[in-house]
Image (cartoon, rainbow, N blue to C red; front, side, top):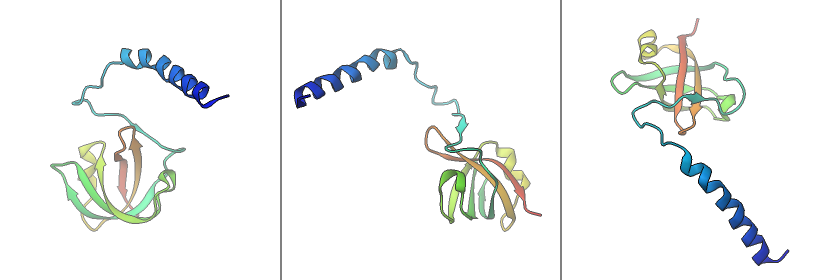
Length: 116
């Protein structure tokens, strides 16, 4: 195939998806997006709570490797799926938590419990 043929074929394929995309309705920005695991079932990860911001529904955790997200150990800020989760822990607690990546790219904690 020539370069022109390949280019024409690529443009035709790309153009065939445009009508389907045009029919999709935009998401309501006020509606929270569902969390979707990136790879496999999310397993609990060990960490330590460094900061809690209840008003912003965020928590800072120093954590170990998060295998399901291919994430190395670090300290980072996470959103929480449910603000009530922030009531179950306090700064300094050793915790086990489950985090998932949303289709919007945010990392959201879906479960957190103090370690025993």
